[in-house]
Image (tube, rainbow, N blue to C red):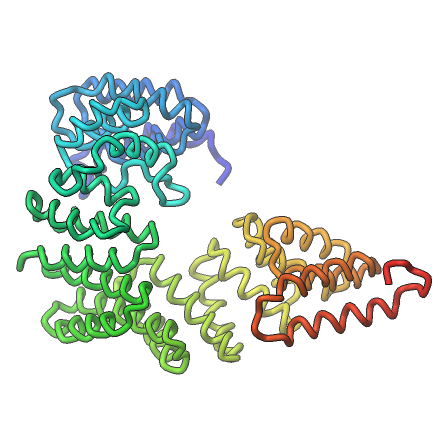
Length: 476
């Protein structure tokens, strides 16, 4: 909120509250992680390092969030701090985060021998080495493991730890995948391990393999982990859809539906909502929009009743609005988008979609501009949002301002639709030669489309624009 000077006093206030006065005491490790994150964001890396070292040396637990904080630092600073923390961490500590600090330090410093030894002290975590911005393994992390595994690649059939790291870091795309899984199972029957491998395989886009791991994790759950098992089976079904294995996905959905009546109401509502979302995505992937639409409607309505994760409700709303717009049901889509913007004022996709809808229908121009400018502010890297704003400005007769936005959009992404809009803005600004060049680029970008109508429409604009150019203009 721009009131940075108030933050330290809030930390002091939190720390002054006695634990016995709170119904749910704040874990000390999380308070420390919050303070560390604050110090780093203010550029006080040395102070943060000293605080973290003092916590480790005092034997206090360190929250795993600290690893995410380290991952956000510049590479040289992250390496220096990781190595320093790894040296200070106690060798005999059983604390999970301390173990990972030491393992990360060994990886960053290229100490293959120590990393390999630590690897056999515990199982790697999905959070280790994950870039928080992209949610993919960081480059340094992949390279470090490649160095180690280059010497151990033949051990993936006999060493479960080596097999696990191999799978987490891109291995197993060949016929050794099943062998590696079998190797891990020989020493580990923990479903969390196979769920972690499934998550990693998702990030690699290996959906069929991810589904295999989720299904295996589900089978390893005992009777006390029923809801965990169902969640894993849901993940397996989602991965099957992404892999195009629709028959297996439908069979999994049917099995889950049969189990719904056996759950208590809280879990039943949550699982039922997840199944609606999966069925809707399955229908869309199969090209059955008519079947998908009522499922998205039911999911949107159910998300107001179930104890729904806010991210899930937002994604359901965006999906429903998209299907409605594709079906030409603009009025209903507008209602959903207005609700989304009200509930999630920082959801840039909803801001853009509603602003662009109003632009296309010629309504609420001033409010649409506010929404679109906020979307651009929240996600300046999104070319589509600048395109929407440019289109609005062009329609309002502000051609020069529109050109500025659309030129920035094209610099981010040479999308044919954006190039066409840029040509329109150039033409409105009287820059006909620039308009022709932009439209030609759009026609070229559309050449791989099966539908010729877009190319023909833009070519008509080019021909009409050439007729308007001075007869002696060499560019004709």
